[in-house]
Length: 607
Image (tube, rainbow, N blue to C red; front, side):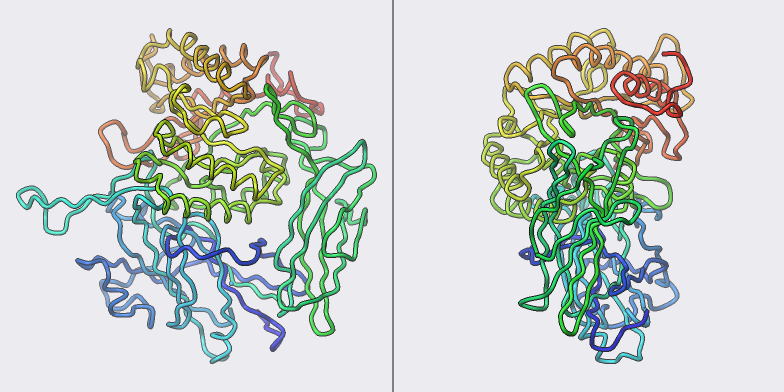
């Protein structure tokens, strides 16, 4: 990477999932893109790796491992691929909590992600961060220029320990009975059903900007008749004043609107709206907003993809571009062999996944890692303060993605507890203040009459597992219980409802007739029973159905899990179970009923 003298500012962008001290947000978090003024270098690959297995788990700090390569000696010479999860590739599958140290060297300098993270460059601390899955960055220009001809070393210490105040929360339980447990034995208790991986799960990038640069862009879109409206605001860092040129271009590179002000409204004649896949002949249409900033000395260019669309909610419908939209898809919360979490887990999805969704018209409910808030102590002020910062970071990162149509602030919290009312009222109000263009929800599995946060959401999202966790084996109760669920929730709140989770575990290749639990036949029968009720209620106020899950995934070891959760319609190796074909037929039928499909997308079979 060439660095043009004093004109470049070097930043390491940590796109990992990491925990540390909460710091106030300052500035934007635009995705690193190359341009005539910016360079991006990936620092992915094999990093030195060392786990701190000392009794107090603190040897790395006490002996300042960050001042040298973390790998030293024959028996600790390990390497780890980035991005990748750590636990999934070791013999220790317990999800144990400890510090893991990783380092990498590069010659001219870059984004990270985990639970607790502390980062150093050439032995000097540059940042720390608390909160998983969301990016943070540090400017490292001064450190690089101290010795510009020598290689530079990044060291990162990551820790996946969960406490009552982290997201997700958890507790550490020490086992002090020496007749049963060895000295220092402890267990990380979790309140969610997926594996508590450690590692750097997102890319690590080095990128440059000029000293005066475009720091953030905020875009809000609307349309009137055939005219698109793009309201924008550009923030510049490094100078009190700067000259700006904002140009909006179509897919062919033709200018459709332009401006010379840092904020304003661009009007697009004969606008091409952003539509979901199978809702329009031309889904996922993206314009390009080029922001060109220059002073007498510096110039910066940044290009942002822009999809023009609107989102609204009524008592019975979810509207995209004023047309009813029915959510039908999958919860894609899973991992895979070797790499663990990688780039495709939610809480929330990686930016690269959202960019793909933007391009292809795939609709996303963007959810923060607020899963498993079950302990009443996790509704305290410290937890709430951290949760507010996490939503700040999520909205800051994803606010310009047209594929993101709704924010979710939590998943299956104990929302019937008395403190939940103030907690979710505050959290949802804060999220709406950050972004008034999208509805806000959280995913509930609480009783409709006792849910303290439901009055504040825009859409009710309900998880239920009738004939699985409740009345296991009795498929005949699904029509009664699912109908009652919908009628109770809508009767009390008069808000549209999404069935945000439903499903059953199925071991691939296990068959039995009549259907028995854990067989593919039982999974099929359960899905079909749910679908029959959905078809009745989607004509009224049910606006979506999301299967749990896209693929099987790893969980903590437990007597009710056989090497992970098997509710996927695909195996962990992405091979289809029988349920995948049922879901494909159903989703094509829904698309043929409600969509505007070009001829080549018509499902080939009669439905």
